[in-house]
Length: 447
Image 1 (cartoon, rainbow, N blue to C red):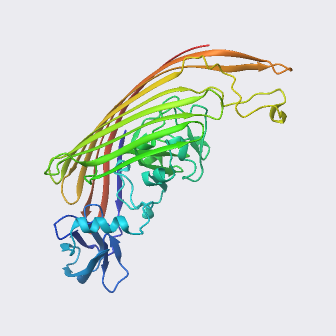
Image 2: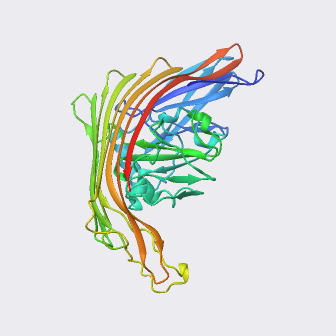
Image 3: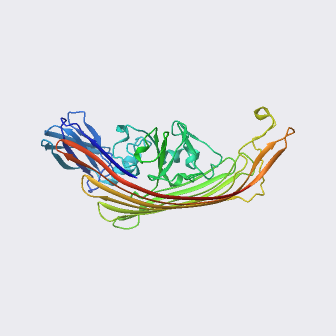
């Protein structure tokens, strides 16, 4: 699969640009600072690298005003010529440590997301995109005590429903009349039954693209798709430890640590892990899960980085009996909600899911960026179950016994180039890339 996208600007519109970078007094980039062209309604915010742009300006002299919580506004005058780009640097009068402390204590909406993840290959803010895209962040999942993508997705994304009885193992999510293809970090990992439902401890965000917008990643369904972005090192020193317990003998503990491994700040790490025991309202059913997700990032230079990531999900479960049966159908008052038609002596199901990634990012210049990634997935599940054949008039039930052995192996590779170029007065936003994949799945079942 190859993708090539070009957009052109109108020929008669002004094309002068002011590009700037905002630094703190200790010479570190300041993200989310408010930047305004004085005496106009032109306002923007800096990105994670402290960079901002004002495009489509007439030639002339402008005053740029930068403000940030905990810092006095800073003004700087800049002159830009016709169809030229003026590059400026502005320093605010606070250290990065002071700014971070103020951000943590502020009342900003931490659930709001303005931009998509890099795996979507779109640099445009969500507000300006023609696609209907909804993002669920890890902050939302933590505050709602969501355990996995199946457990919490339907309450946070409109029009999305869960379907299926294998919620302990697989994610079967539907929207707008079709099963949504599952992406992870921009790669299509959709499988025959799956994919394995991602544990919340490894999720940084979930991006839902609604409607026929599948061209964005060149694979999808008319209903849309969803992309799970896993946690990676950020370079910020922070940690999270939580413990939850609830009904039906539910116990769960998790941790998420992020920081630096080297004094020069070039080697970063992140490790997330969780363990849970969970029973169900039906007797004998349970689902125990273990998750480990470490990752390392090495900053080769200011413009180049390599990231290694590994995720493991292991599950042991007995999940048979999510249904109730009666010759009287729903009118039978004798059916109890703890009805179990399986056999507690059955061998529990066991699932092991491994995935490994390598990411390479390089900023070629101020206009062009390159990204490449490869991934390997390995999955194995053995499980037994009991199913109903038919019911007799007196309430008797004929059942059959099933044994399944499943395995999967996937390999993926992607690379992309994105940038901005000009042909005279015409501006081009360009995205080029290629996506390679190989999926294998084996299943043996006996009844």
